[in-house]
Amino acid sequence: MQKSATLVLVLCLFFSNRLEAQSINTDSLEQVIQHSPADTNKVIAYRMLAGTLKDREPLKAIAYGKAGVALSLQLGWDKGTAGCLLNTSASFTAAAKLDSALVYIDSAIVYSYKAGDPNRLALAYLNRADIHMNLQNLSQSLIDCDSSLRYAEKANSDDRRARVFQTIGSVYFYQRDYGQSATYYKRASDLYSKAGNRFMMAIVYNNEGNVYKHQEQYAKAIDVFTRAIAIGKEINDLNNLSMYHENLSDVYLQQNNLPLAEQHAKEAMQYAVLQQNNLQLANAWECQGRIYLQQKKYDKAIHAGQMAYRIGAAEQLINVEHEATDLLATAYEKQGNTAKAFEFLQINKAIGDSMLHMQFDEDIAAMQTRFKVQEKDKEIALLANEKLLQEQKLNQQRIAMFTTIAFVLLLLLGVGLLINRYRLRQQMHELMLRNRIAADLHDEVGSSLSSIHMLSRMAAQQAATGNTPTEILGRVGTHAQETMDKMSDIVWMIKPGETEAANLKQRLEHFAFELCDSQNIKAEMQLDELDKWKLSMNERKNVYLISKEALNNAVKYAEATAIRAVAVTKAKSRSIEIIDNGRGFNLDETERGNGLDNMYNRATEMKGKLNIETSPGHGTTIQLILPE
Image 1: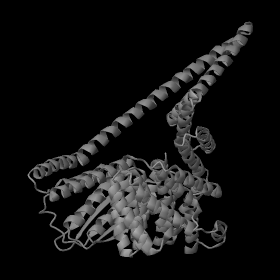
Image 2: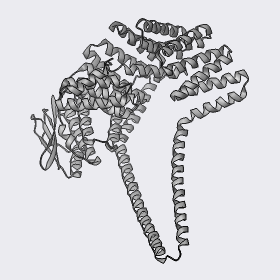
Image 3: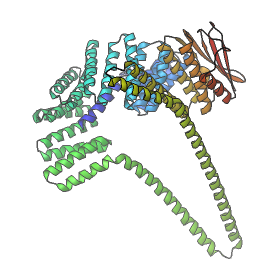
Image 4: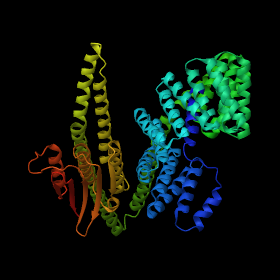
């Protein structure tokens, strides 16, 4: 139990400190919001409230963060927008809504680019790395860590560098690469020491201890856990001291040093009681129970297990309940009470299947409810029929009854036909969507996967001859990244959203800034009009792909130093222009490849028009015009 629960706690504590955390009086901030004018100070108050409340009241923090985003956009304050988006993303993470958190952190990165703030960019990429790590997308997490480290270097921030190394260490921990994990945790603790951040030093020491514990290097684990405890006492970090002592107790238990294991388990319990932290208290009781079990003090082990189980049940801590029932089953078995052992073994198994059972129970409950309603309707119909049979002399009422029944049958028949027609339309829509997804996967991803396959075989052949296929592996990585980007585009293009046009604007800006930044090209995005466009899923896809192709061509072939994208809404048309100051080309003498043909075809599909204005030495303008 300790190994899994401790890691989760460490990651939660690490992420909760990732933002610009403030111990701010929320009442005073709310007073600022209520009485101050709509200026930048109000945006700051919204941002600080979102950051302060994200762990305690994440839904309320989300509302404040969104309000701050709206106001900063109205004021045109990019730095304020980036900060509010950052804290809103963290609030969604605290609420376990990682998809929404990812959308907001992507937007935060775009506005951090606009604000030109490397420190905030380092923080934004770091938060995105954490989200991907929680989603088990570890390769993308490492890519974001690399971006964060680049901006941390620009900001010359040891604290930011340390947090990047700490996240990389956690990614390697997830991958069970404990050697690399320990290396990066050590680099993080050295930088925290240089920056004077004692709080984070203790957390990283705790992380290192978990690595050494998994490697069974118990002497090293004891050393770093002891350092974490010393710092925690020095800075009076009562919230984490329970966890540090619990982890150290577990190491001594692994070494069968039961007196020291019991000593630290008791200290963990004292700090948990002091902080009124029921999760840590339950973990401490379970830890104490394992020690008593090892000491063959089965009565005390049972008491400790029951305490952990009661707290877990009261707080709905399923993991704690599962570990506590396992402890109780083992203790009762050792004591010779097979009936109780079997009872808690059954409870343990039931808890292990609880998520599946809860879903099953909900489905059964819904079916039972529907059945009861149908039975009640039948009873009512039978009573009505009996009453009508008793009134045989009332011929007019009988005729009315038959007429009503006929009407209901016709109505049910009509409803049935409508439902059947709706189902057929839904099936056709799903079939078309599947065909479209299959075609996109074949066209966009198939060729890249084929290239990766061929390059992998070439790399294997070179490796067999003793050569290091560095260049080929680099190309494999490039193709893999392109495949990931294409898959992300496909998912985004078929996934409906609440504000599709806004998502299109943010995605284009994010793509353009990252692409241009990699080539040191100045990018200017004037795409606010996209927020007003109402686009179908297919139109959104085509606008995005045409714009993406135009941006790609400008970066790869035009040798441009500046690119500008402009969206314009007129009385009877809408247009988007991609303008570069590159070398241009002769349109009449240039063969039209698949890229240009696809752009023209997509424009025609939307009943729009694609114009290309260019000449050698005078740059290129690509204009997509759509009817209103």
